[in-house]
Amino acid sequence: MRGFLTFNVLRLVSKRGMSGEDLRKELERRKGSRPSPGTIYPVLKSMSENGWIRENSRGGKERRYVITARGRKVLEAATEKFISMFCDMKEDFERIEAR
Image (cartoon, rainbow, N blue to C red; front, side, top):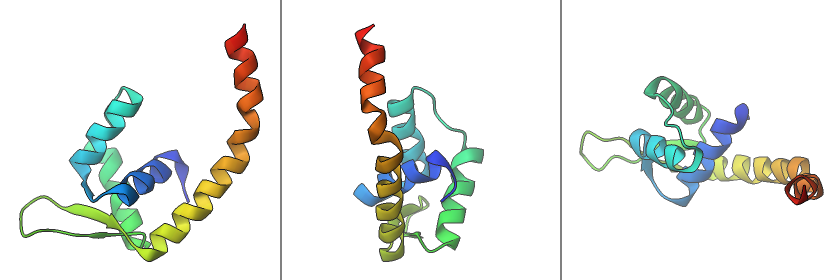
């Protein structure tokens, strides 16, 4: 899986169906800056081509994306990797906060 943005998008879509605009707003809320459409939509396209998400349109203009079974497997593996890489850093972060 390429990059942290892909991981975040897949994780958010796994919780509920979301449009590209929903994802942009949620990432802004969490990170403080809103990714451009030129950043989000290529990620969604790539994830769709890989079979990790699919479009779940309700007949309207807005495309909503939902995670697939394959996407859930990718997300589980990526989450395990994320935890193994970053959870051992907890002590380092606690030391920085204590300063």
